[in-house]
Image 1 (cartoon, one colour):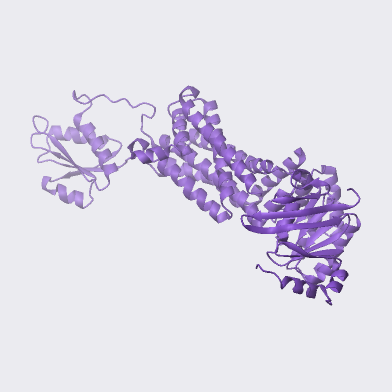
Image 2 (image 1 turned 60 degrees about the horizontal axis):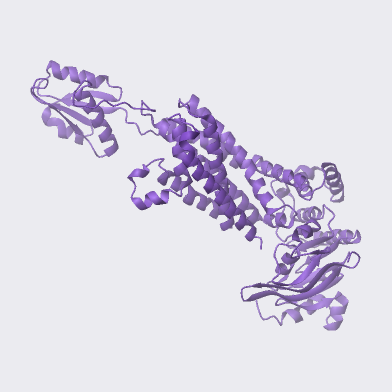
Length: 246
Length: 352
């Protein structure tokens, strides 16, 4: 387990009443991989991600994250993952330093380690006086980069990114992806959902969900070949057109 | 996980300090309410304007009128002619007129005419005047001994009521808003993905408001004792214990609200309408519960303040201790335990 798959989903299903949000999805993600999780709105991406994060229990099927069962060991799962949601979710009133200290503290880091991480983050994000400014007054791009740094403050095995670059300018997106690559090189597995098809090209492998099922899974070049498409955008359009539900 | 818990409490305290509005609500409202209710708003009837009407001013009439004029609650405005009584009342020249008959003091009588457009003041003014007219040594009047609040000060009645109101306001409203705010901004999701346990989130949210409430309790007691001159002769331990139980109950109510609403606005409305108004209407703070129709009396039993406020009166005004308030204390404790159990359970279900 330790070497191969960090995420393993086996016929993972979530039903809400009659509605099957996620329909028996099966896939594996290897350590250090950047895995793109694509799908139109309502395709079931968020529900699947919530199950993997231990926020929601599967109706049937099983899955492991970082080697722990998502249904029975969700508390252990939570200790080994980082999560960044599409909504900006640091505390705007608190300063950068206070936010870092809070989340580092929540993940059980010692105060000495927290100080070191603060220092390291200040350097890597090129923050100086920003460290003691309320997060709310930073530009959106810097906020998102900070969110990512905070989500990975405890060096998790896996980091889940839910549409992390929404509303961010192209240059900042580029820089953001450089941060993702750097983290992946350090051995952190990156599980990312996105709407931008150019970003899908940056991923090691992508899956495309349609109506709760995984319709396509492979490296971007494999998928482009399979669907005779010039880019990921075309692949996505071809699959998403078949969607029954909105 | 101790570190994560303290980090979280630290953050909650920072939130409160960073948000001057919260501090203002929590610390200024109690003081303002105490001062308002203690000094400005009063159920006592003062300055009753009284006229006297008599066919002729005999020594007997003069003696009575001078008694009336010397009463601290009454302002004597002078004599008018007997046929002017109706006109004087209609023209708002006085609240009441004492009409003496021709041979008052020997066989004649006196009559009190009072303006009852406000029944409360009318009744009280009539009461003052009857007492004076009957004289203290009248054989037919029963001797009245007023216990606990001999001057009938309204502050004695209001302070326990304000306490019931303020703790509900601060604890229920602020806690529910602070939890719902995290839902609104999306930070709650991040917290739920983190290893910190939901129960710990809840407790960490409550602790700063518990501390604020304790400051408020001290503030209220200080004002009661030194500004409003309440006797506070009862058991201090009973007062603090009962108040703490009530505060925890209010915190649990706030948590409960946060599990049923999703926006700060809704949280404010629910805590305002559903919690504050019953405290004022159904707790006995303003209106005696005994006078309510039976169904309202039954409903009043589920209003926590209906148990807290009488207990506070017993301790603060009557000077009693645990021995007399244990029924209220038991009811409040049971309510608190039940609410915490339900809310924590609901809070967990929301995660699914």
